[in-house]
Length: 146
Image (cartoon, rainbow, N blue to C red; front, top):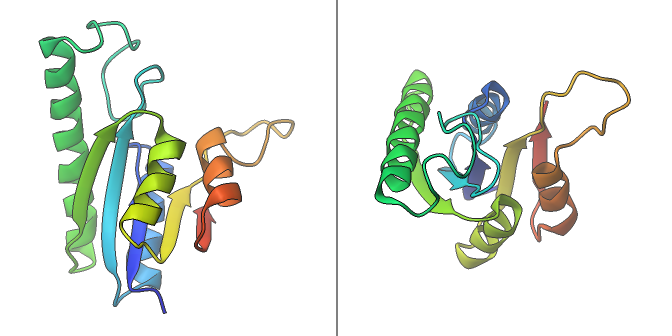
């Protein structure tokens, strides 16, 4: 049985569904929700149109990222409350797949639960690039929710 579960989130409905799955499937585990802000590909949780507006590294950019992360984690806390659970939240800035894999190793995570992307076209890959990289390289079991 897993004692520590990592749930990477990007603010998408699918990542929050992965959180719900983790809370149901691992009722006794400590759940950590991890949000990585990608410098060049804004995710569902930010209102930033591109990685350059506002300028990366500027005070305005950090404020935008912090505000979006706070809003995402408030939603995460609401989901956890629906299951009468609490979660630990962590965030970072950088390349999501690499940082998720580092977090798994550095923090002794037993299991990862993450959402696949929501592409609908039959000719596209089943997983997003972050999910695929984590599945292929994680040293622990990974559950992909779609």
